[in-house]
Amino acid sequence: QVQLVESGGGLVQPGGSLRLSCAASGFTSDYYAIGWFRQAPGKEREGVACVGVPDGDIYYDDSVRGRFTISRDNANNTIYLQMDGLKFEDTAIYYCAAVYTDPGIVASVGQVRPYTATNEYDYWGQGTQVTVSS
Image (cartoon, rainbow, N blue to C red):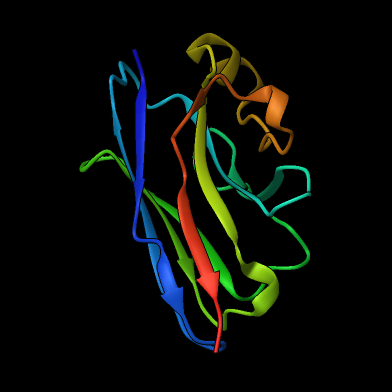
């Protein structure tokens, strides 16, 4: 079974940077679409950065494009979200997510688009709090 554990959240001043990590275990192949989502109080959980399979096609929400970078280190089984130029509006609980994609389907279509909706993912971490405050 896939398990995801986030870390790296904390309190940071506006304009500062954080790097979130998501340690993954239980993967039996590299054919997992991944994503970072966030949820602020009173708001829906929204996609921040998502990657299709295989790596290469990346989605960023308009609010973070140019400031956030998603990456995956398959050798270390870790997913990262580098966050620069943080704003008050970035305050939220951040979650990493993954969903298995059949290798045969990936081979057939060449590349699967990033999934950007919460209901497209099967595995979720417990979340890590990011607070941007002066």
